[in-house]
View (cartoon, rainbow, N blue to C red):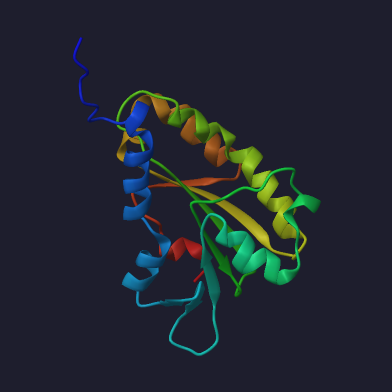
Length: 174
């Protein structure tokens, strides 16, 4: 039986479709579009002094936590790698940004209900540096469907946030 090409995501296309969505919503690009300067993970608003850091995945550890002599294993049993993270020096808040893309029924939507657990994990980690933590989802339009009403309400109830298709720069305490 011939195999049909997957054009909606899931299965073998999960990583490909999700990565395209992640790349189309890169925090560094969004910051540059708003006239911020991003250089070596540091974010500048035109001044010589950085106002924050933009790190993603393992760079959270290598560019920020390790430079503060913080070993995540003292606080978390596992290293978490956010899709993006803006660390505001101004309001001492780490904005964890997770991006979720979906175009058909599948398991990505189940990950939305993990927001509170991950928020708690990041809070343990950043509290050692006296930083607050905000957990944000950037979601594709798929999650606007009526069957996601309950999980979106849950995200808010757990003190987390979600936005559709873009990173809200104004929300990041810049």
